[in-house]
Length: 305
Image (cartoon, rainbow, N blue to C red; front, side, top):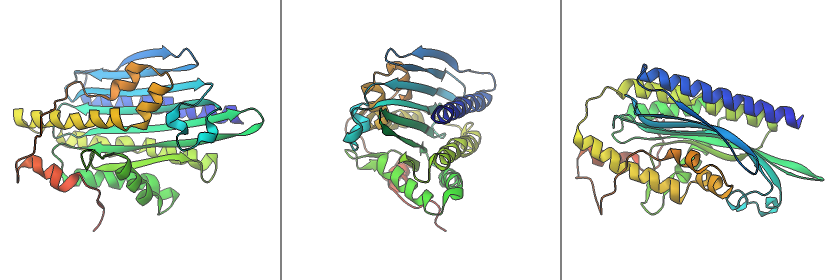
């Protein structure tokens, strides 16, 4: 039964990667395609990295599948569960980050994953995790509302309390403490999910994965042809720096990959191809750039009437 379940998760994740790559390539209308890179990990497992670069819509995007195994969980996975430190493990997931060309199209991130920790003579410990979040530069409220409506739709079959709880978790997780701001406009985040049994937890992970494209593509299609100039591009590159800061300082997925001896190029594919930092920069009060800071980089209820 355990083997069949692991294979079912793997089959779903590979299919999800295929579907997302095909949909994003379609937005490029032939201008760019994902290049595939297969890799193996010495301790066990490997992955399928796909990266699109230099497109007309997407400056760079990575959609990765990995399935790795090892004899000992890395510290990032056992910090809150030290009793699992001496267990063998398998971890698999799809992780993606999309960096568009147009500053009016938000960056998006999604991840769905499964981990099982095993020890002879003891019950297996397993859980699912994941979510998706939106990082706009020049945000439109209707886009953020659509994103959260779709996130809520992913959660609704599993109970009324699920979306508010995982929306709050996302706001708290994607928070840059040293900047006192959220990374973006939020979405969903969940981890350590095994409540209700394997089938229910797996179904929820699938619902989150399946709702990423309906959440993101309408925004891309609506904003990808919006005119912009050097000012908007410079602000996009500056805000991309925040993305780098979060991924290198706080992101548990990045830490897990590096600590478990994962493939560095695949782990760091989430980084934008170009990012800028400016010393002590502040947006001009009342400017279009200030709208992001004043109205979007703080947790709030996007679906209130």
